[in-house]
Length: 84
Image (tube, rainbow, N blue to C red):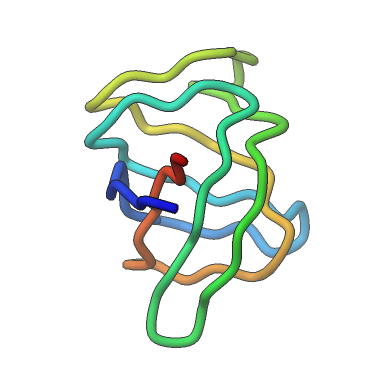
């Protein structure tokens, strides 16, 4: 199992469990990702993502993407795409 860093959490909305991530790599709906930081470390699938309140299936480097997350995340946590 390989990990490639594709983004960083810039904000977390706890009431709706959504993380805003600034991407440095490509992400598509269905990807498996790991979110890791000082207090965070879990794997989940990307089931829902939006850019500027618009649902999308694919995001590219430079996009600020909102993703539904399974657990609490924190600003500065890394987003890693899992392959293999």
